Length: 261
Picture 1 (cartoon, rainbow, N blue to C red):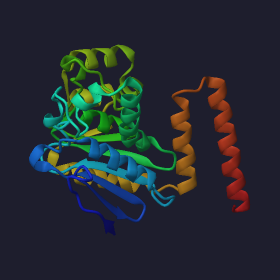
Picture 2: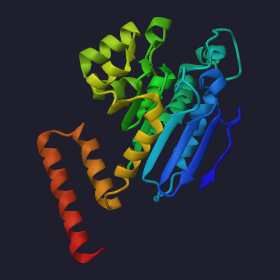
Picture 3: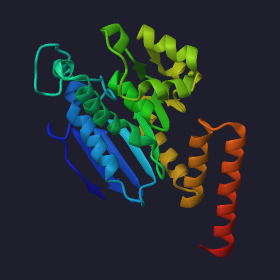
């Protein structure tokens, strides 16, 4: 097993690797795993460094909450040089958008080809925290978990990939309502809406995630990756395109099984 240590420079991100499973932990429990721009840039670096042997990425938060979102010190509209909202608001628009693009990369890689990502969520998942959980393929929630996207109520918008991932999971009208009201979606409702794959007692969260990871890594790797790719493409494809994708993937799998290559 390999691991890395958290610090302010890497946004309090800790990683550990056990074979085909990479665990990424937000390790700032005393601040409810509040995130900074360094968090997002480090997450992007983690995604860029993946090798082909990684099959599952587990994303978790240390302590009693998954993540309370953006570090409150960065909300100030006053001038700053620390990546806060004040700095972004004073940049030329194109430069600010490029900065946000770099932050978004820390979230978008969690749907990368070749991996399945699992968020283990307990306690608060607010703003950037909720968007990080939504960025994953699957979510296991403790029964005390609560997801919230309050950006609009603060005069902002969700900008860390959250609008597309939420819309994909719950549909147009529900995504509109959740984002515009900024209300909390608690674990039972999250499961009913499809935001949570399963809800368990907080004491069972780790074991449930471990069982899920074991199930995800059980199928042959190439078949698993081809199936995941089909599920992802089904979100965008019409029926004809998706049927064609299934045909092509199946022929490739059959050829590999018959020829051994």
